[in-house]
Length: 466
Ligand code: ATP
Image 1 (cartoon, rainbow, N blue to C red):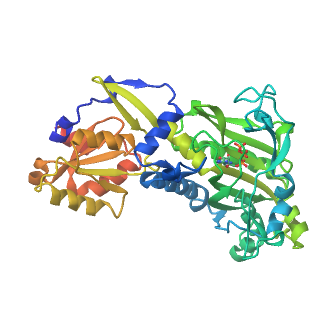
Image 2 (tube, rainbow, N blue to C red):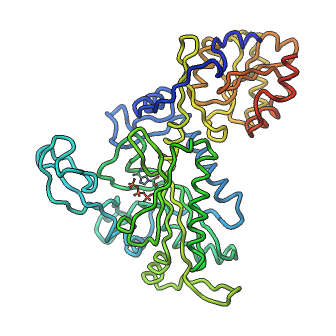
Image 3 (cartoon, protein in one colour):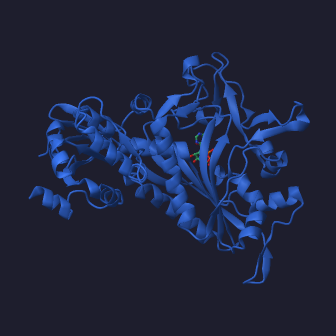
């Protein structure tokens, strides 16, 4: 065992006691705050309800969730292209989409404590907070309004988009015209959306400002059922591939009465959150509703000429619509692990390497001036290629714990032996196994291991053992 290994007092997973109990939302929120993942917005002013800020590690995690989605949905497919449309759109977009007339939730108010609730969230007709009597349901407009330009009157009213989808619908002719792509074709984007939710809560699960990852897949009518099934399946597999446990993920089909006014069919992908099963993504067959509406309201013909069948038609749209914040929360909860080893509790996030905010921590055994140059050199060698983090404060054991808590897959330790043999120790987060490797090979070894190569079965490990 190397010096670094001795300092890491905990053993391997085999003799550990793993906790499989579901973690509470409070525990996750507290870890997020403590370790710079998510902070309450405007905290020094007492916080702004349901608004959250992503800290130094949170922003990395969020980028990684979005990048994983972008890679799977755009970069690795030749039938999907990207878009980044504006948040504020022409107000007629929202008239055409039905949001101005329909985007409201029926809501009730407690006559005693004046808290408001979504009518469908109240079970026994009494206020869930104080048991008071409730008013009759009334509609509540979920869109944020503002004014464009210096004059604040109704004529200048614009809206902050409540979904990113409309940007893809209205750009359909631009994308077809500029890319010369044929159907089936997807247009994808990620970005902020705003909804004046009546009952936000559960940390970052339901907020008034959030981020979406949406793709609109334009298909020939008649092929829509098949594509709908295809995308439900693809999207479910995406979460599993990134580490969500099968038993915590399920598909729920919407009943007729639950379907949105435009939808032909809809499935929710639900995650088993601490507060119960809840949607992280919806996949809908929207039929030709959107293009029909925008054709009607804009006066532009949005039909598509299919040169293969020599027909002109309004494409149907299959829409997988996911929340960045919600899936990030599901990834965090699913990754959260505790194990008791030799009377000490170790908290670690088993995040998929693609999602982990930091891929590798560079940890000299101590802040000894003899170790610093080699350690800094290794950091400089790795940081252009991998998200690396340099830390030489506190004891090595505590630094390992800190990296475990934020899900860093690998720690590289530089000890005095390293100065002589130019070899360093890589420690793996989940198994706590260690291998000793040549410093010059680090980049390639780490990249291979981050790509999924088993940690301790390589030739290097055998060599280190021998
Ligand atoms: P819910 O019923 O939970 O409010 P929804 O059915 O209105 O959600 P969609 O309109 O289908 O949600 O939006 C697609 C995705 O966007 C959701 O699956 C979710 O991940 C995310 N999302 C929607 N509203 C919010 C919100 N207020 N806060 C965070 N994420 C949201």
